[in-house]
Length: 149
Image 1 (tube, rainbow, N blue to C red):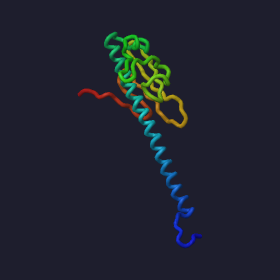
Image 2: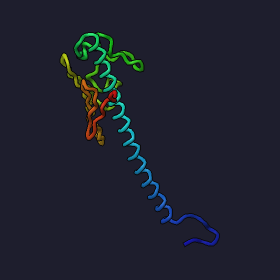
Image 3: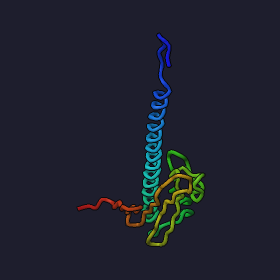
Image 4: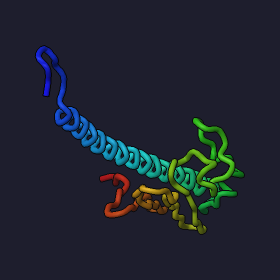
């Protein structure tokens, strides 16, 4: 009960506004989380394409695809933004694709580079790979390189 001349919000009004703000915050945080995961996935796909390009460069020089050690020895693992990458096997030490561990399998005439998500709580990142044909493969889609007519 209010006295004459007093104004303010009732408890019901304050709780209603607090509930609406909490609901909006929950929706916004979920959206931001998915946007962050999408950015990590886009970075992983970009890293796969860059590393595949390095493999092609090595192949044109040596007529075979190279291992991590061979690519490093050639100086092909030089990233202009981050300097020389020393340890591609430890996902926490290299900036190629945040949230991902990158691995390479190569032979004389074929290679596969795989970006696997680093296990983290509450993430749903997908695994991606690229082969010598240049197609990026992931969960539910394939990105084929543009073909010349």
